[in-house]
Length: 75
Image (tube, rainbow, N blue to C red):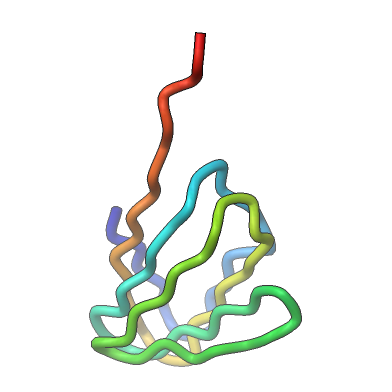
């Protein structure tokens, strides 16, 4: 999915059931996870394992491409 965040907008801390990648397409977005904050800028890429709590905050108008790996439940 493409996530667009205007400057100052936040996405509160949350988790995702599968591993995710975030590829910053434009702008600047701070990602806070595991006690660290990393600013993603255009071209930067980040991987987070499943169920890692993280939060986002746009320091500039920005957009990121988010890919989530969802596994089929076992029967």
